[in-house]
Image 1: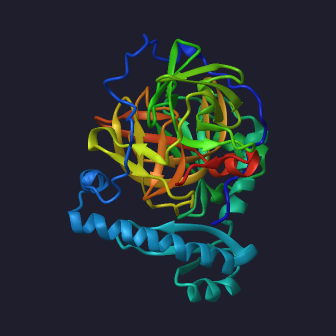
Image 2: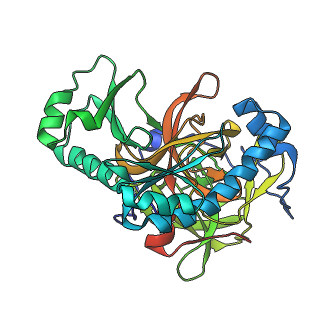
Length: 386
């Protein structure tokens, strides 16, 4: 599968820390204890139980879903290569377990099908829809628009408009030079907010006051230990404490993107694990293969724990009050303030770090994550996978 857009700049985060949870030392220790010798339990019931709960599946159905998804990732890599320049995206159906690879040239369909995937010819594809999104961003629309994202399944760009606002859709389309047939307008009742006061994996403190979460343990391009997380959690140079470990924000981008790398300065021992909170135990990370749209994905966060859902779209633009963030991935996994920066994982493949969203885990909602692949490609970060 083609990688997500690269991180466009290495700057400083711009989080308004009024959104963060103030914490006293040790306040989260009972929620997410740092284990002495953590051991992965990938075959345990925890992931299956989460899938059973959130997808309304039996145990055997949840097992079949994970197996089908793992097989689809391998086929997807071959089909993407076979499609070549005509590749337009990938879709996975959690009900039928069918993988569909989109192509913008009918001549590429047979090669995709020979690789074992279904093929569907579309007009725009991922690159064409990305160009439409770039046109919207260049037009600088008014505050009535809360975001936009490419809907691979319908081959359109979805414009999200806040209910009761005076958003000028026609004016935006005219200014951006975009055909109305390529756009779907959706009215939403809630504006997204950053989950600034969060944990994903284990909690860490920034500058001794606000709290965020570990995305994935990783090393920087020099091989130094650290972890990836959300950029809005801290500016470059901000200090970090996690247990008896110390670190500093070495890289941080927000807005524009929402990505950061925290470099450990003392007592950082890396694992390739994600904490599963309410489901118990740990899930190991074995790679960073990007899952197809429609795939099941699970999120770890200190406020709400371990929840699962599906990937709905990639390359979403979200207009937070603190700034616009591009190239986020949209999911229907629930989250709440305190979950930001945390891990999104599909099977054993690292997907991204929690950025923000709307809704909650009582009524459901939408959550966005920053893909890990841009951090890997742009910064030379290596996610710990063993």
